[in-house]
Structures are given as C-alpha cells and as structure tokens.
Length: 395
Image (cartoon, rainbow, N blue to C red; front, side):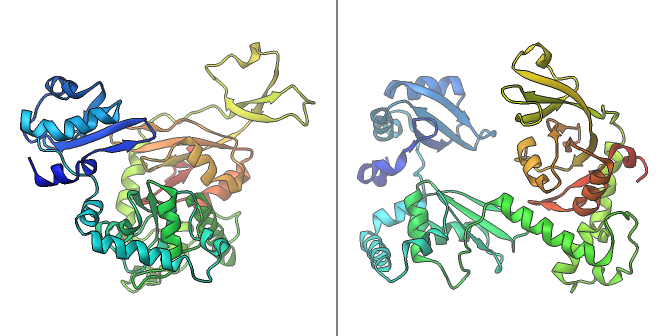
C-alpha cells in the first residue's frame, strides 16, 4: 500500500454533493468486471453505483452512501485485493505534502484580502463558483488547471470556441472562486474579466456581427458577393473573418465540411408543419394571459384541459444543424432569443452524428433575418448551419 494512503487517506476519496455519495476511483488495468467489483467494494459498506468511463483500462468510480465506507475502502482495498486507488486532485496532494508552501499560499491570499479592493469589485470577477478570462496566450487546459488549482479544487475548465477565446473555470466551492477573484484580477499570463454568462457573451457577439453586416448589406438581401479574396490570407484579420462567417461568405477551409453536412441533411424529410399550438393560461384574459407554444402534434392533449386556451397559429421553421453535443433546445432558444423564437423541437441525431433541430419563428421575414445573421456562426467549437427547409435543397 502506498505511503500516501496511510498518511493522507482523505485525498483518496471525495464527497460528491450533487449525488450525496462518497467516491473512490482507480484505473481498471485488470479489466475486472462490474459484477466482481460490486462484490469487492461491497465488503466495505453499501455501494450506490459503480461505473467506468467506457474502456477497460479507463478510470472506474465507486460511489458509497457513507463516508466511513469510503475510508474503510481506502485503507484496505489495496492490501486485500491489490487494487491501487488513485488520489483525487494532484495539486491538493502536492499542497498537503508541502505544508510550508500551502501555508505561504493561504497567507498570501489572506493578506491580499486586506487591501483596499472592495468586496463589490471582487464580486464582479466571479459568479457562483466560476471565474472567466480571455485566453489570448492560447494556454493549454492542463496549464490553466495548474494555475487556478492553487485556490481550490477545480470542477471544470470550458472554452467557448477558439483557444484564444473566453475560458470559464468552475470550482467545486464558491469560496475558491472568491479567493481567485480577490487574488488574481490580473496575472502575468492573463487577466480575469468581469463575469458574464456564456449566453450573454453569445448575444453580444451576434449583436456585433449584425452591426457589421448592416454596414455592408440590408437584411432583405441574401445574395452577398463582395470581393473576399483577402479573407483567404493567413494574415486575415480575425474580425474580418468573423464578419465573413456571419455574412455567409464561407472561407475555403470551411466549405468542404459545410457542404458535406448540407448534402447529408438533404437525405431526410424536412416537410414539417408550419403551424404550432399556442397554449394560453386562462387564469386571466386571453390577451393578457401567459402563453407558450408546442408542436401541432403534441403528445399531450392540451385541448382537454379547462385551465388553458388552445389556438393554432402559423409559424415558419428553420433548420439549426451541427449543434454541439452539450447544447439542447433550451440553449438554442436562448441563443436565438434576439429574434423571439416561438418553439424549438427536440434535437435529433443522424446516423452520421449530425445534431439538428427545428426552430420556429412568427414570419418569413424573421426567418430570412435569422439566416443572414446567424448562418455559419460559431457555437463553441462548431459552425452551425441555419437554413429554412425550403432553401435547403437550393444550396
């Protein structure tokens, strides 16, 4: 058994508040079956779940209901079964082994909190458990984790798109984010930004793109044919490249992938109804009551409810394709809320793993505006395709 387990057993398990379990983990190099693992780890206490990350030699996680079960497992599983547990968070282990360094870091943070920086100024740089910065130096994820983990245990590091774009660092505890904001409003590698949610950043980006488009074209036109040869240079300005994407002027390196997705989408039937059901709560007058929209063929029989008024209203659908995996209908509705969408269908996945959905708007004019302003715009690491079903087969 490793000396670290005897000295610091608490770094080999952790509490997961979301699921109210105590977790240990190891690399399943022996490819032990889940059935066998349940029998082994169950000897130390009641187990809620055991799961691995998909491959025989990847990490395997054991979730206990009680803390004492996890402690007992840490102290005995290597001796009794030869399973070497992995420590959580190497940075935390390093600090425990170097108490002098850990004390110096804590003192540095405490001293920094006594400066004239007001709590209001500090709070601008974090929200909940997260802080954000612009990754202008294109730091790799492991280096970002190394820098920020000095303030606490990191839950996740998320980039918004290009490596030089916004980066969100989320901690396990809000106190860690607060300490980071107080100690690191600026750093030699970057500086923290006043916190804005990802959806707010996306709105600002779309508004910037639309402003640029309005300088060169009107919303009513869909045929833009300026001389864009300068966009293909390796030294092309980033803002000009973003404008070309938003305007539908597709750089050469994007053309092949975009064409492949469009041709793939043409294989499917996109003859969706251009009518939605408008559900209005009848607790107040029909004109003032709160309302929302659902599909014409909704599985729920809204007409049978006495508390709502159901109307059929015209709606124009748009196909939103190449959607990132973590984005669902709620995200799509929020992303396009500048154009007041009525309803988003569930995201469908094709046999080539292309994710798409239908987004509905009030009028054809709005659809054309949405196509012009958002087609080929970037969500995280993907350039989405925004096109009406009628226009899809014209591309």
